[in-house]
Image (cartoon, rainbow, N blue to C red):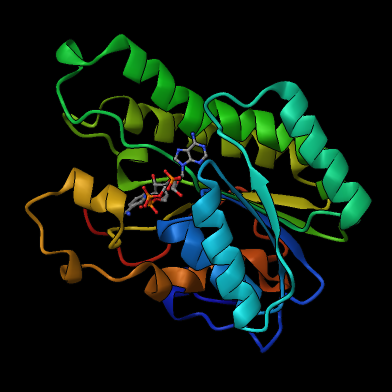
Length: 257
Ligand code: NDP
């Protein structure tokens, strides 16, 4: 049994993810990019989902030049993707890869940092759509792929404001609270009935574009890089986490993110 408070230091065995197909949203930048590179390093076939093709291609090239298994690119804007887009993705996974062993819901936007009384209605809806609703739609559409895996892991990305909200975090905080609720509902439905587990993960303060947007006055290097927080992501995607379902985990000892 692993100490779930020490996941930052988790290291899987070499090629622990070999033979596992893992879909990562927002794989072109920040934490999603680091997760894609890290999963590929441990042998996974990664499906790189994102809205900016050039960024996905750069990650694809990096994985290939590192000697990883050839990845798959899925260019999709989670704000505008249709039900059919998600169904097509599920069908392509089954046809080309056979099954889906991991799904990392990572893509999110920050929205506005301002009081709710001044918050734009449009931004509120857009943040909820990208950060929350797409997680439901994508999970639902790829359930058949996940059910074809011997065991499968879904990771929902939370935040400290998804567990205790704070002023000025607007619909970002609301979307992260709801993501926790979505995770708990799936997890309870999977419990005892399925080979799928669902958990949430708060990355904690991490050097990325989103963190710089939320905390412009901060020295970025005061926070760990995305590469340094991969332990918890690897743990949840590996078979070492089979049996852990419905948990709210932290990738690092919490800081105010
Ligand atoms: P970044 O802003 O660096 O990266 C977000 C990624 O999501 C980008 O690849 C972006 O694509 C993608 N994305 C955004 N909108 C869409 C969309 N409509 N369709 C498809 N892809 C989209 O964020 P982080 O890496 O920092 O954050 C990753 C996750 O971690 C998020 O869920 C965030 O809420 C969470 N988190 C981050 C913390 C931190 O300190 N960094 C702390 C707590 C939680 P593109 O580059 O093309 O815009």
